[in-house]
Image (tube, rainbow, N blue to C red):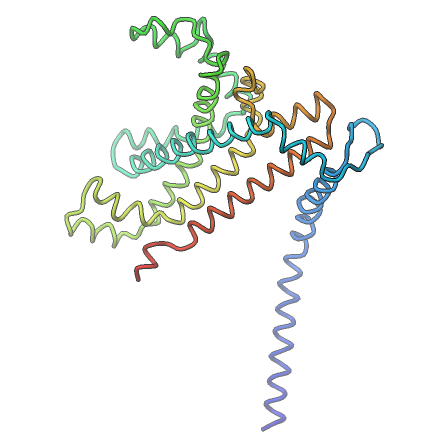
Length: 309
């Protein structure tokens, strides 16, 4: 009996080892690629942020934390971070509200729902350059669709208004383009979340007489907890990495009114040849995005519906 038990234990251990090797053999290629193209560049960025480097020679000067001290005292950095926060909060809120409304409308029967299902992803399949050019034409002071439409509605004061040329309106204008471009992905995300709600729950709500906004507030919205977490994290990541749209529309102007973390990074690296300082900006951007994402994950860690069970 003892020998049989020992043999079974040895076989079990061997099977576990074989299973571990089998899993490791599948994970190893992905882990190696991830390490080479994600982890290693991140480590190199952290190291490079400790140097003063012009980017055109191999000569680097170790400066320790001076780049980060300069960053802390840089008003342009805080202005860019403030613009990122504005886009994150204001545009993020608009995106999530519009996405859930459009996704909810798409789940209904009718001609409008079919039309929404056919066009909501259109901005996502268009090149960012095309999106920027489209919005530059729409916001053109002389013949843009926005000014022409407002004048036609009787707002004569909007004639020849430079939406992208005034500090007060430049950031909201860029934010509008960002919302238009990003909305389709979040509509798809919430539409998938709405589809995942069990039919039994919907039928029970109908039997209980729950309709309209009350049904949405008490049943639909709470059951989208995990989708909301993903949506908010994606908003944070997308806004912290926004570059091309802002650069193409305004290049961070006027007077840094639309400057973001990455447009300021580009300016420092490729216009001022301060690659060490630009790398410190990249590290700061990464750390801020990571902390925000971890904070959101901690906030959405426990579903209130599960906590009541």
